[in-house]
Length: 474
Image (cartoon, rainbow, N blue to C red; front, side):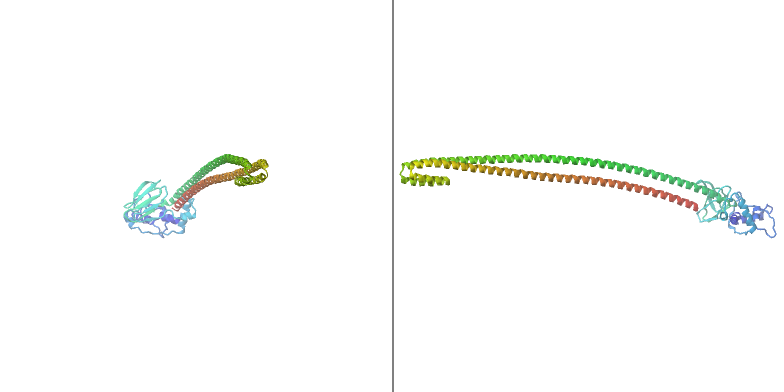
């Protein structure tokens, strides 16, 4: 720290100015500070000196800047001890440790042509000497002092100084001895600024975390509401589909029952009608057959009686021929039983005409009765067989119709049930897919929003940390 004060207090330019003043004003009072830090010559000579380079001193000339030669004046142990003691008693340096006291106070800065040089002289009565430069002093980001170096010297005070080169020449910012403790004043301000930045960062972080919590709560609430509404909608849809399916199945069963009843009634009516028609036709046929047989029998009897009468009146010889002829005719007309009767009649007729007539009448009557009885039995058996066959046919047709109807009904009901169940499952699958898709989209949105907010917060925190690090580095 002593070396820094030496560099600040006894800069080469100030030393040169002091020597010039010592030559021009020998009667002036010596500077106690210069004597304190300068080694005593073997034969000390008291000379009048006028301190230059102060805040209120005269400006430097261009000749001073051109003819400047840096001189280093070594200090002995006694001088260094005195400086350290004085520094330890100074209120500006009482809070510093050894490392901070040994560090540079305000460095000497060189800038390129038309460049900017920033010095941090602190505050208070500190001054800044600028050569070949235009100085703009900001206070709270507003310039309050503007000075121009060159032919003279501009003295400025305040926080950071920004110097701009003039004339395309490098310039140097030299701090006066009063700036020795300015860095530490600025350091205090720097600490306050860092504290403000940290507090602001904490407030921003808490605010952002609160906003994130509120946003996540809102998103979670909205998600819960959406899921509840979707669940209610799916439940209502399932209930509606179940009711519609039940009504459809009941309607199908009712329609199927009605159709089966109609088909059964129609089948019974049809079969009954057909059976009645068949029985009627059979009865008519049997009646016609009986009539034909009766007519044939009557004609046969009449013919036989007539032939018998003719045979009685004719000769026996012609009787056999006539009987043979009649027998031939009867054979062609009547059945086997009538032929036998005619043969018997012919035999009896050859014996006696009266016996033949009597036996013929009795035989014809008996044979006719037998034939009628046989035909009646045959017709009855035929009717019974036809009735049995018709009944079996009707029962078979009804059974087959019922079986076919039941099979068709079961097939229709099964098909409609399968289609209904498939539609129901498809609708449920669609709703479940929509529900899962909605939940996935909402979860994705929540994740994206959360990740975005966390990224923004992390970015803000990183930016704040970078700003703090840059500020600390400066």
